[in-house]
Amino acid sequence: MHEAYLARLPEDLRANPLPHRESTWWRWRDADVHLERVGDPAAPVRVLLLHGAGGHAGALWPYAAYAARHGLHVVVPDLPGYGHTRVPRRAAVRYPDWVALVCDLLRAERENHAGRLVVVGASMGGLLAYDAATRTGLADRVLVTCLFDPRDPVARKHISRFAWLGSAARAALRVLAGPLGYLRVPLRWVTNMGAISNDPALTSLVLRDRLGGGNRVPLGFLRSFLDSAPGVEPEHATGPAFVLAHPGEDRWTPTEVSLRFFDRLAAPKELVLLEGAGHYPVEAPGAHRLAELIVAFGRE
Image (cartoon, rainbow, N blue to C red):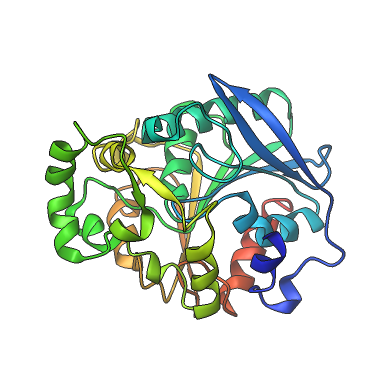
């Protein structure tokens, strides 16, 4: 599966030779969390790379491999309900579990790494990166490809499969997720997964991937996400510095959706548009710009 995702990246961005990749396990609460560690653990810069609702560690392998080949050590978790992470009851996973896990993982990585620690969040992982960084204060920099507030009705319309569903989803899930909170439904039923990329072959790959975009999610998870609020509101976020590297041709969450949150950020921030790239950025030159931005953290 790693190779299938790697093949969608421009050839000159495919790390060659590929860096060392190790599958490890981290015990968190009652879960065995699968972590992929890519590159040299002794590297001076460590990157915590977070997937979103359609991903897992294998889906982020192309960028993890590129960063590791340029001297960074990359840690990619499979968040509960996705990838190979083992939890007692997948139907009981809720979004606050993701937030708590990433905060604890960030703390654990900081304890074991004295150098620069960067958090990179893709898609829905962008908000997760923001939340973990501002709650813990342990990240030196944060880079995200998307940054939206699930409380924002405009954002909900875009992330839902149908605009009308975004308007009704929050109220409907509050009713349904009581008796049906443990019911797991295909992700594509409720989200606009068809817009996850502008590359038809990549979109098909994601939708077939049972570890990621072809997954089923509990209604209770969706409700908990739509009802979530960041631990630190953006107007009160004083650090770290944030880079929003937003795909310029994103058909799922257009740049203006992310800007509704980004513009409220009080912390140091920079906006970079990934020219020609879709939500999962694999098109030139946007993909090259994103790869450069991640690697640049190792040169600052």
